[in-house]
Amino acid sequence: MMQGISGCTRSSSSPSRVEFIGDGKYRGDGGMELEALWRGFPGVWKEIRGCPGRFTARGKRMRSTEVQALVEASGIKEAKIWRVEKSGKDPMDVVVFKTGGGVITYRKSANDKEVLVLVHTLNTESGLLRKLLDLRRENVIMENREHHSQRARVLTIILSFLPSDARSDRASSITRNIWNAIDR
Image (cartoon, rainbow, N blue to C red):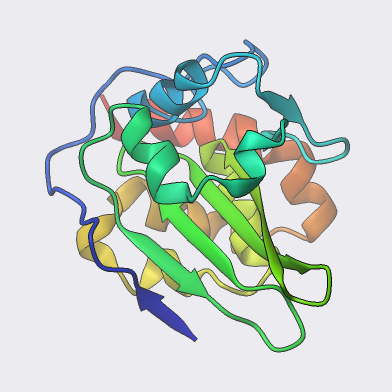
């Protein structure tokens, strides 16, 4: 099940050519909104081992901060947040940035469901699309055309043809090549 959370909507402005820099390993695999979130919380993001282009937020304060607050604190004016639920899994809030990349926030219950722990993952364009494909939630991209770029939809289709292990190995370079071809 997927539903929009009110209070945050996405603008239809065209993508910017400002690229994601982050830690330098995935330069160009995302846009200005992803870079704003990276810079808005310096020293917080740590790469997830074995997950190229995916970073988790460190720190106790981050575990209690809603994703909408992270986005707003980074100066991102408008973003659409989807609540994604899958049977037997923790619910997730997914933000896909128009300029590339996004955030997946896992909503975990602790202490017999009395305490909510939020686990934020910042994702490059390729990291986000790979994860959504692995979760079989690519519909967040494909069914919401007004909130995502044509590039994200093209990449989702291309990556869906690759086996999961090949997606991890090749997704970032494929993403940068598609960005360069479409943005010319």
